[in-house]
Image 1 (tube, one colour):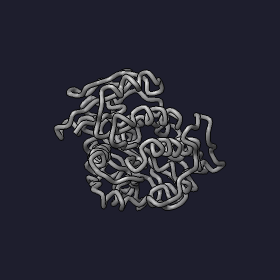
Image 2 (tube, rainbow, N blue to C red):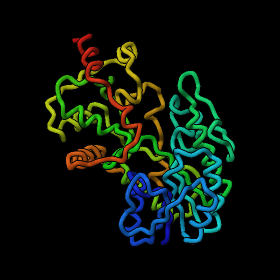
Image 3 (cartoon, helix red, strand yellow):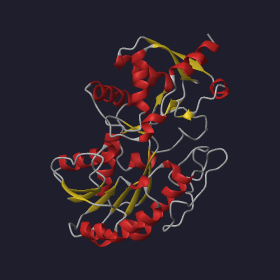
Image 4 (cartoon, one colour):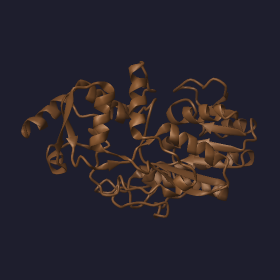
Length: 338
């Protein structure tokens, strides 16, 4: 099996490259060579996915049984179309890492793989789309839907789209789980978003990588929601963070209206907290039927802490700084209902 991983140097892309090598596959990676080291054992090709000549040079390193694209999130549909078109003759199949944000109903409505997707042209530039007054839909969602359409135009039934919600695990660069772990380690009264029994569905990066590789060898097509089928309650999530870090802390559960009245920014200041009804109601049964297997989220928490505690260093990314509530703001809110 010969595959091309677009990206391949950090987090999900790195997991996919390492997983493919562990299966005995021949792996080519394509990236700019700026944000991470090439995985030992791959055949690296460095270049710009927005440059036609670089893509033509890359195609000469084929053919591949499949392309796995992990790096499209920062590019408009027209650039995805350029890459998919340039590589169509060099690959049998395209596995595209997309997002649940492509759905018209995200995050307000429960979602299945059959839910309607936002409409965006395959050749759209970065200006296409809009963000609604309530934060949904988003420009990002339109752009990623256009990226899917671009791949579909180039590869047809040989294209498959994986739509994760939140990906956590060792090597995370966004900083959601690392923030909760660091906060748990600090201990004390911990501001926590009620209800405590709210189930969340983050998925482990290693499980997404394994499913992507399985799909590279499959003959299926279309979209798969890649979310944890069982999930974990927020109470158990914070409890696990306290357990693995040894933090002497206690969660103080604040109702959504209290957090909103104090100006707590959803999704970032308390990572993974969002009040929209559909955000943690994404059905992944089609993916499970196709072989998605998700480890317990407690294992993801434990392994991420082990990575951080061993001086794990994610790739520098601006989103890391967005996550986590300031100590002073948290203390002020906690004091208000002491």
